[in-house]
Image (cartoon, rainbow, N blue to C red; front, side, top):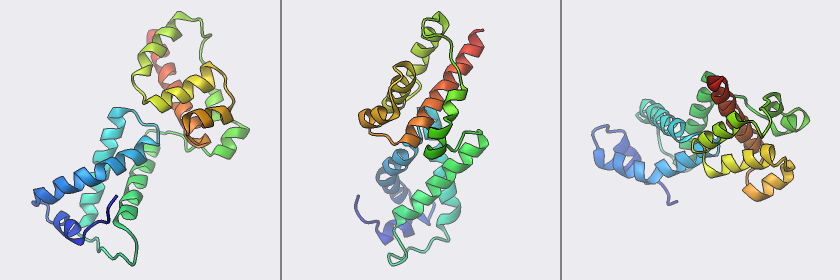
Length: 183
């Protein structure tokens, strides 16, 4: 990604400068989405959180002083994105899974699913698959359905343990909710 221009940031401080906001969106939306996608969010949650990042940025951009000596604009935007994720996690009571603690006592193990031959589970698995991105689903499938060791799932998906545990937890929660609705 190219270095952020000072004129772009000054342009963002003028809320009516649609050209600069369009430019910002095309440059930085992919970065924000990538950071949040690593949190294993569904498409709708991801877009909602991107909007939250934009709203947070709007409330602080007027005071932002761009100084390349102090750090990059992308770093500042990444911090805002991380804060939005933390607020979302707290609001929805999502676990902050530490990979070391998760390995010792995986939170994902506390969510039990019916036997894999259960027709309700098969239906829910089919329906839930479309709610998650490919890596999230693959992590869940390998870890839970195929019972692969975490090291193997890391190699196959390219995700770290923390992201895998979060992915498994999110899919299991989704399946549990779907199963409850079917009961």
